[in-house]
Length: 190
DNA sequence: CAATAGATCATCT
DNA sequence: GATGATCTATTGC
Image 1 (cartoon, rainbow, N blue to C red):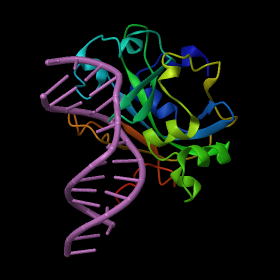
Image 2: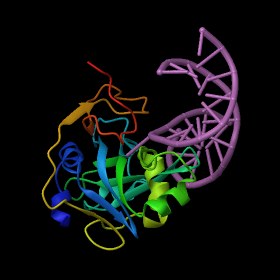
Image 3: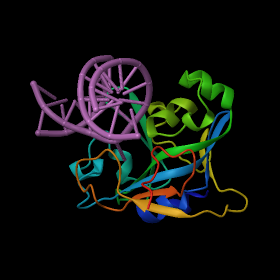
Image 4: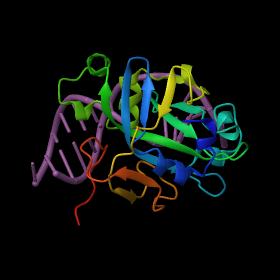
């Protein structure tokens, strides 16, 4: 995707990234679950605490990787959204594994099915070998990149509150490919 | 199946 | 010194 395609609001980008493909090295997966984090009064966003060394990339141009360590052990990958100077971003929460499966299994140290390789923000960074070394990398080209599928697949998008936060817990900013088997959590049945 | 505990450390107060 | 956009294993019903 060209860098300009990331210069839309975080919720728009979060929805638009569904069904696009994330590549790193020989591994790749299709994005099936995202969350939008806003600027301003979104207290769940890291940018709500202001411009710090860790969050600096959030305040720069879009289409860059914002990667941070959580709970002392897991890396989380975000895509910077919106025009230069606005701190929105999109957390990548789950992928459907597409290539490099053997390497993903080796990194994740699991024996269960492929749906468990990438169904969580900490799992997919481990499977694809993404760490803070890639902090600030552009995502339109280079070793870490996001590309659109040739023809966007047909699917339904569901919107839910975000997961794992303690502020703004009811905001509808999580976007999922409805009923996809690789989601980090299954939706409540109607 | 649901709830809980523990791991583990960069970041910010 | 407390916290956290998580994951895994384990316990309990």
